Amino acid sequence: MGKPILLMLNSWFDDGDIGPFYCPDCGIIEGFLAYNPDIREQLEIISIEFKRPRPKIIEYLGEENQGSP
Image (cartoon, rainbow, N blue to C red):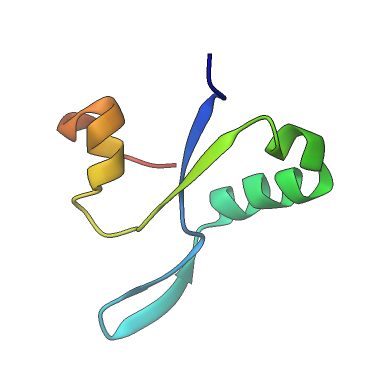
């Protein structure tokens, strides 16, 4: 059995000519994983771009479940 998968939005993103924006929820998770590298090693972390559609999320969870984090 493989590692559990964590689909996580990139924490910094631009939206066209505005931004950059920062996702505070993603930052909290990234900080937690930075302080706990043993937990980070136990996960397969897949970075997802902010803009929709989000193909990787669709692949795993379906088009109706693109909301994140």
